[in-house]
Amino acid sequence: MEVASYSLPKIGWKATAGSLDKNELISEFQSALSDEIDNVKRNQGKELELFEGQKTKALGGRYVYNFQSGDLRSWRRRRQGTQLKMTIDENTYYGLVDSWNQNEANIAFEKDLGDFIEKASVEDSSFELLLNLHDKLEKVKTGQADFNSDGCMKLFGFLKPTHFTIPLSFEITEASLSNLNVEQQLAVRKSMSQEVTFIWDRLVPAKPRRLVQSSIF
Image (cartoon, rainbow, N blue to C red; front, top):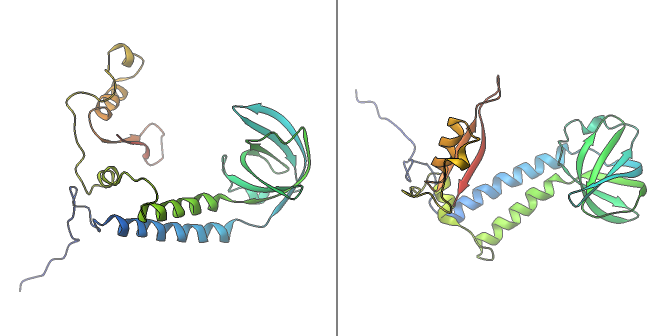
């Protein structure tokens, strides 16, 4: 008896399964973003009250304030750099988590809000970054925003990237690579000779390899 075999449709340079239509692919990304936005909203927790914010430092165009709070254990999942939407004196500002512990938080702003902030209410607004990306993709679909479609299709394996016999943009000299180990030198040379390069970090023990860099020229 003959057994029928089934396989995914082989499309693209790397047998990537999926549509070659740009707008269909973008719609799939938007759908995934919508799911993630809903998930973040469900898990962002209640609004928090912070008080006695003292400006502690100004660095690189950011102003860091140290706030007190009764209990910040609900922030245990907030990573450094998480965007926060804050209401101060009925005005809305956006800050980034610099650091925190159970009773105090350091928040960085792009604007100097004075030496002291008496009180602030704060909510996690990280979903707004996802929402902005969702809206940006919609502008790409409608032609309102520039989009390197060929580069993206090469990144995801639908089109074959170009290789170059001469490195792009600058000449790689032995002196410029002297402070790198053999593997790092190979990574630099390879990334400068092709349009798409993935570099995996294998230096952290007992952890899966992580994609730390990709490049499209």
